[in-house]
Length: 71
Picture (tube, rainbow, N blue to C red):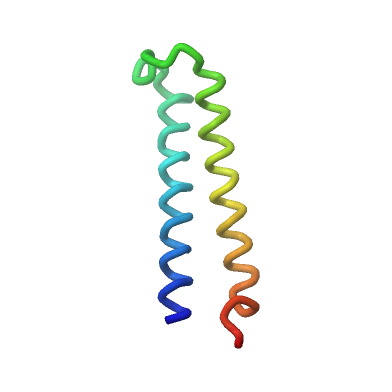
C-alpha cells in the first residue's frame, strides 16, 4: 500500500509539472495561441509557480521516500 501511495503522488506531481511546462511552452513559443489572456505576465507567473511547486514536491518525495515508507 505504501508503494501505491508513493506512485500515486509521483504521478500526480509529474502530471502537474508536465501540464505547467506544456502551457509555458505555448506562451513562450506561440503567443497567438494564448491571445485571449489579457495579462500574459500574470498567467505565465502562475504557471511557473505551479511548475516550481510540482518540481519541489517531486524532489521532496524522491528524497524522503525512505523516511515516508519506513515504519
